[in-house]
Structures are given as structure tokens and as C-alpha cells.
Image 1: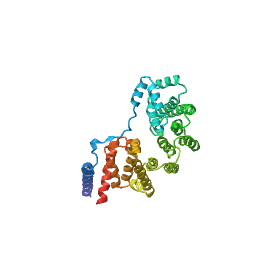
Image 2 (image 1 turned 135 degrees about the horizontal axis):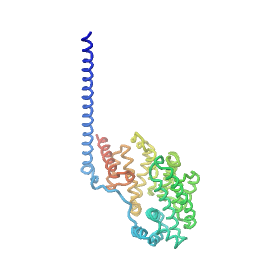
Image 3 (image 1 turned 120 degrees about the horizontal axis):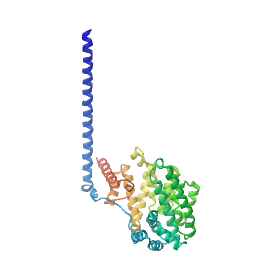
Length: 379
């Protein structure tokens, strides 16, 4: 009996040591296998990255650049003058763009951003020309910029109550200023309605009121690109719509636009919005209804590129649609189709990757994935 009392603890101790050794050995083996697997993945990825240029004819990673919209002659000088307190160049630039709704929308953004930082030049302009429609609409957009800067781009749960109160207060000021912008604007100018879109989104306008605003905008410019992009955000589920309402809007936009207008991008963006966080991306992006939208966008792109004047005037938007097509084909597992667009993009990193924190990194990652799909398809 005494021997058992001595032996049993020894046996238990030995068993514990054996189990501990076995667990450590097994863990070490698993870690080794995991490390070896990760090394193989890294080696395969490095091999594919080398093949992107040597085998597939793509621009090497070190030459990739984030695409930028073509510069507007005179804009930099106008912004510099505004910063120095002189509003005249900005006024001349807006006046010279009269009738060109797309150009005026492009000018509005940087001018209002400048005024959101320091509006001394804009207040001087309005004091000297109180009935100037361009100054009035820039005032609205500048207030919108101020409001959204206050709110920030963080999720609602991360925004303080003080921020929300200030956000809504400034948007209310913008809403009042928009009434004057409408009064002063030319009858065919969509800008006073375009600048109200983010106001409607931030203040939570009812769908019927937003639809009335949209009718005013599209009555003046049915194909207003910036307007369509802002409206898509309003109708998405995270703001004041749903997947159904968002797609209904996108479908109507595509149906009402001629082939070559590049507005099929609205439908692609609607799908991308719906698929945020989806687990099986290949099943989602490879669904028949999604591929039908992709084919419509392919036809849209081909028509735009077939017209030299359109291709030149809409070069930046063409890049954006081509980038989205490469993005969609990659996620659908269609390597050959994706690589065709990646080759055409060359070194330019376009939308949708420009929405990422590191556009070049994710652009390169998708090129690797597309090449891998290409390899698996030929295997």
C-alpha cells in the first residue's frame, strides 16, 4: 500500500510530462506546417507578381500610379488667388464654364473646399456682387463641406452628439442658402439642385421630397454624372433607401441613358454597395444578373471609346468604368476578362481602388488574383 502511495504520483507526473511533450511537439509541427504553407503562398504570389509583366504584359508594380482627373486650366491659379483673398479669377472661371454642367460641377468641388477652409474671398465676392448666382451656389457647397468635415467620415456610432448637432445646424444653414441659389440661378442650371443632394442625405429628407429634387436636377441635365453618383448614395440601405430602391434607381438611370454615356457605372456601384462584407464573393459577383450588368457596362464602354471626341472628353470616367469591370471580372473568377482590362489600364490605378486606404496595394493584389484565375482556368 505504501508503495502504491509513492508510485501513483510518479506515474501521474510522468503521464503529465508525456502529454505536455506531445502537445508541444504537435503544436510545433502545426506551426511548422502553417509556416511552410504561408511560405509556399508567398513564393507563389511572388512568382505571379513577376509574371504580371513578363508573361501577362502588365505594368510592373513600381510604375503604378493613382489616376487623377485631368487638370482644369486656370483652376490652380484661381485657388491660389482665392487663398490670397482675390475672388475674381474664380468668378471668371465659373462664368467661362457657363452651359458646361460637367465642368461647372468639377470646378465647384475644389472652390468650395477652399472656401470651407477660409471663406474671406467668397464673402468679399458676395458683398460686391450679392446677386451673383455662382457665388451663391459655391456658398451652399462650402457650407455642405463644413458640415461634413464636422461630422467626419466615421460611422455614426463613432460620431459624438455634439458633432451631430453642429452637423445638422450647418446643413440647415446650407438648406436656407440653397433657396437663394435657386432664385439666382439660370433656369437651365442644375447646380443649385446638385448641391442639395448631400443636404438631403444628411438631414434625412423623405423619399418623396428627394424624388422631387431629383426631378428638378434631371430636368436640367438628365445625364448629370455627379448627380447620379450622389443619388445612388441617398438610395442605398445605409442611408435612406434599401437594396431594392437603390437598384430601382440604378436600373432607371441605365435605361434612360444612351449607350456610351458611361452611366452603367451606377449599376455596378449598386452591386458593389450591396456586396459589402459578402462572404462568397465569387458566387455574388458571378450571379447571372450581375454578369448581365457587367455585359451592359462592356457595351457602354465600347461605345464611348468608339467615338474619339467622347473618348477624349470622358477619359477619366472611362478609366473608372474600365477599373470597375476589371474589379468585377476578378471577383467573378473571370481571369481572362479581368486581365484584358488590367492591360488597358496600364500603370493607372483607377476607381474603385481609389476608395481604398492603399489603392496601389489592393490594385496589385487584384491583378495577382486575376492572374491566378487565369492560370487555374488553363490548368
